[in-house]
Image 1: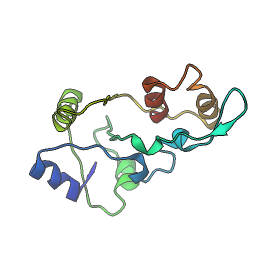
Image 2: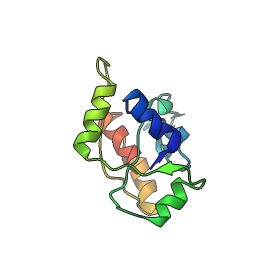
Image 3: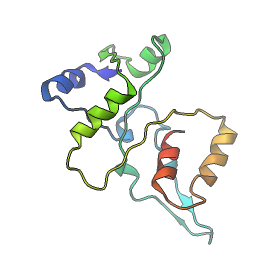
Image 4: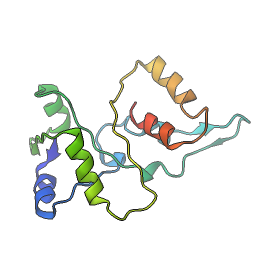
Length: 139
């Protein structure tokens, strides 16, 4: 679902764009990267780049009243249908010539609170990699 003004912009400019999770309404989006971290040595810190990740959310469901109520409370949203291939093509076309960029498409997992906390404590155990950052955004 896309806000109506953004939908028309997609066609006028012929560009697809990603949005920072801070713009999304769900307070849990990007919460792992926004949380304080503790190193193995016990020092605390934060991820300075948490605002430097962008994304889009899509659903595989054809129709869902719950999705409409959550993501379009003002009823000014348009439903868009595409394929994974077309989505990738549109994002690549919008980022031609960009350097040092990467992308991930994955299914979001909604674990229980216990499993989510355990995941958050271990997602970066092998280091701060692009794969670990992507995994953190898919929870």
